[in-house]
View (cartoon, rainbow, N blue to C red):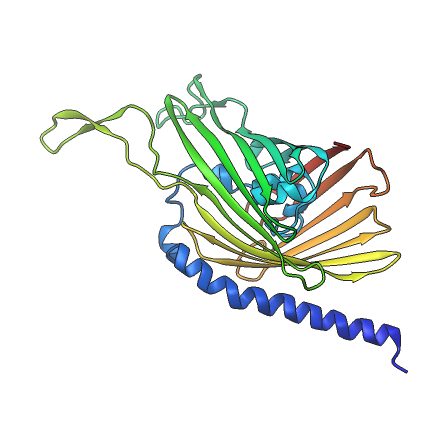
Length: 343
């Protein structure tokens, strides 16, 4: 007679192999057809780079493998289709201590509409305290100050097309201001969510920040070789469009601990592809331990996080925390609180 523990280990290994192989075999051709693989040739060539910051703390703890996670309103950011996966009102509030005194605040709301659809609202702002301007002749400060602000607001609609397939669309308005320069744009997020039928294996795809090139309003003063001054439009830059393909599946489920595995491919237009493997262990259905590893990252490949979410409460809350080390800049910490209400 086979030992139940040995059988569970064998099944766990098979699940990991199936999860990894299925995603690796499908991710490469799909992303290659959608976006060019320019890698490091286009680093720092897109506008609105603050949109690359992950506002979902549970996703950050998983190495930003959030496209197939779901669970709270903040996941709207990664995949609009995830919104309809949970049928309760959810409010997420996030604060991120970013680099060099920069803060990022984010809020999201999910609201069930009908039997198979949900509405979402979200907004985020990257901001800092006024900084004194320095010049060549006044390196210790000129007495004048500047500030910057990046912000967005988004409206999301998520629709369940069948028991297995869901679709989502977000329309977002982005605004950026720096000293006397301002720019704004409208972009879209598209997402799908599909249950394969094998256990709870789901595969999700999203296309984020899709839109037209953007540039600051107004014109810049230039001087030609003869010393003549003239005005010219600012240069246009592409939005930080990114393609994500990911999957998640419960690898082990017991009375004390549940283990979920994640895999995600990220294909941005202004950088090389990244591949993330992550895992989340939930103890007593209340305490989550998360870790994600980017196998393609040269620096700071590991992210970790914690979560407290008493599942037994129909009306309750959850708290999430994520930590990301950086070799050259300061450590990034993120905090999030979620409120759940019955519809």
